[in-house]
Length: 191
Image (tube, rainbow, N blue to C red; front, side, top):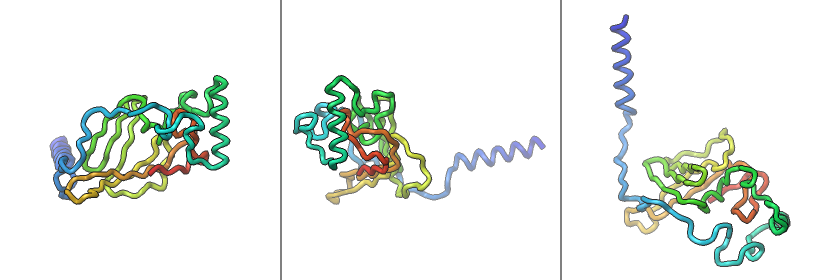
């Protein structure tokens, strides 16, 4: 009996080491932008549009309902409160706010996934680039579920753009530290 178990274990180990029998093209790193190193935010934190003054001067494209929410948030902050910023209650920033980078991030591109590793709160964003569809049973999360596609816009054989759509976002969240609101139903789609 021990002899048979040993052969079974060897066969299983060989199958695991060999991996799937589907042949894949080698991963050609030279086709992708050179993202190595740390990436830092440029400009001040908490501005929707860095060319405009903070607060109401941002003129964010909000409906009248959400403009009132934003104005109430700014008034609360002016009185010394925390406004609608969920980070004050220890809730992670979530998307899209996490991409405003409080601390540096690193970008790692692999064959099927691009990772954005943010130093602040050790946040990780996975962007699946393997052609999958959005799942229908995924629980909402702060970073959401991202699917992307690399695009060679100028036809030179190198990718110029990573087009990403993120769904399944958990609330409460704000667009940025100013308290700029996102929709309360959580059905936000970030493109």
